[in-house]
Length: 147
Image (cartoon, rainbow, N blue to C red; front, side, top):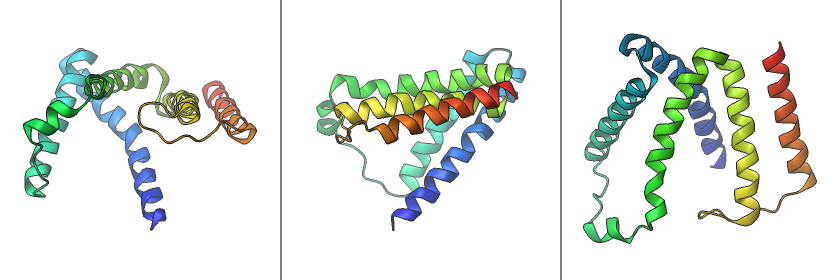
């Protein structure tokens, strides 16, 4: 069953550069990456609300909403920043270079989050194998950037 999540991750990952290109085109029409990101985020929000209603996912109660720690509400800000960033980066770096550096940054942060068990992650200690994996990603990003 875990392989289904791997396929899901591959599809989601494949859509990231597609999203960047679509949002880059939106920026060309709207004239600014901030407005393109805002519109993109608004459309995504409407889509998620519609899907939640159609799928009959339970609507959170007020008690559930106030029980979330204050820092848990920052995810939307990070998401908005990420959408804005990919719009800017896609236009400057291209899809492959942008994705390579995004992935390198994601893995650097991820091994630290795992190692210290931060923000709800289970602890997975940093190992030399994980460090080599991240160094290989950085090497790959450097090669993609250069060639």
